[in-house]
Length: 120
Image (cartoon, rainbow, N blue to C red):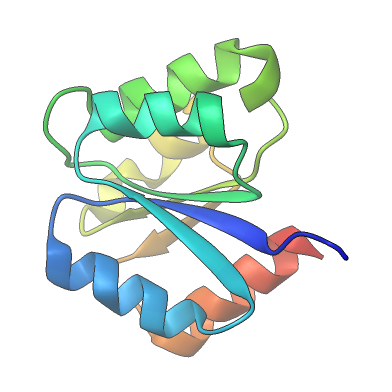
């Protein structure tokens, strides 16, 4: 039996974490972090298949989490989707190693499509 694909959601707003879970839908297991320190620890220990990472989270910023994740052997290959309300952060996100950038508010079907593309 194959293990379910795991998505790490790094978002400090509980309602947005729920929206991401509902948007992505079934077929995935979800682990969640509400701050940057927890996000980095879970990314290192849980080996998610995809990380959905908000930039504006307490503790370490999303960009700091991304930069540190990309320095880790286990984090270099995991796809990271940055979500942010700051469209100006797109270039900085890609420079830090993001695979995709999704602008908030996002269209649920669009987020699902990005996740599916990255886990395919």
